Picture 1 (cartoon, rainbow over the protein chains, first blue to last red):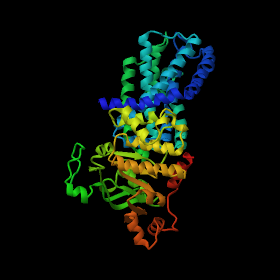
Picture 2: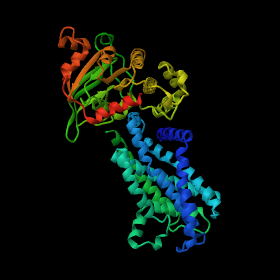
Picture 3: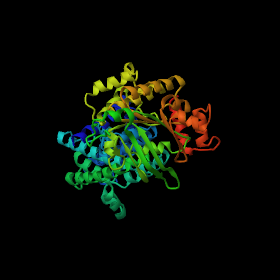
Picture 4: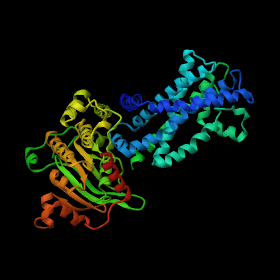
Length: 256
Length: 283
């Protein structure tokens, strides 16, 4: 156990060093949520066509946009892994005696660094737009936990896809195809109860829905979680365990 | 015969054996790897003795990289067996990984990290004790001590290759695998790598298996070579013995052409692309 922890932290440490050294990606990833909240959110909040609770539409969609940022930054993680394969880095990692679980778990943890930065950015934008943010320590820690689970799930999903498609070109195509349906088939920008039945079923099976729901109950005053924090965390932990197992199984196939 | 016991330490070797017989560090029997429509490696038998620098020669697509991938546990064999440092590559893969170093064909050091950080990652993954002193020793051995704090993306191709060798020797492996170690390097950098590999073999008693299609490299470095052709071992022996088999005054280049078909078009598109990509990365 101690060995797995040491190896996992070694992988995560490398990713953190690289991110700190070149934060360009973090800056560029901050632009999209800004556009969603400042333009889309502010305009839609004028319409008042959707009953979204006391916090208004902007307050309703703020957790959804954080979940979207987590999804978008984690889902293209696979491209970095394919790049590492092309450079021989994955070959070298797999030849070490390090556990495959550590190599993959280290990647999942490093995806969280991006998620944490996205969280800080969206808290800042939402505050500037007068969204009633909950600043209690427990609520913020809960948000960070949900963000961590979301980042880990979607980075493992992305890594698994990368191991199957194996080329950057194919991955780009599939990444584009996956992200928008995952986003729109969730409760990120509209509530589940206005969805047609078939879409509600799809949304219920979509892990992003539980990320959004968990965030919604913790992030903004006047908003409520539909399933509850415990259920959201349980579903997300279970989903992460499944995707981690798949990624651990598929990761060595990347170099074959 | 002295072999490693289950805990990885060597048992004493009788003095007679020390003088006359070297332990097989790599033992391959009937090793085969089939892909969907082709057989990349076809029932090969090979023995690499402890302390040797062994060269696996062959054109692109001959099966050299597939052999290395199997011996380094990256790829499972379709048939046959092999042991590395006394451990089976399939049933004792973890033990094999603890005892080998690997330098892939591509430039695999992370350009966004410093030289020191690249080695630190390896030290952590191999569970090396006294990391700092080992890293400093390895960097100094490869002549990179003064560049340890520089980002690897500012290194020359030869420096990156030396850094990768430093990375692969940190945990004192019994066997070091290098896939086309000097491809794309300029002549000066190439010779520097040769010098360091010879020193590594001599000073640290590391058995080296390298693949190459550079005959000068094989002649300069290897005391034992095998020529692969279409997945099979076409010839095996010391460079001198193989030259004598081909003819009077034959060079290793002649040996290569003789056993792998001089005018034959060989190599898959992917192998050629990888080779060119590696060469391009090294400037």
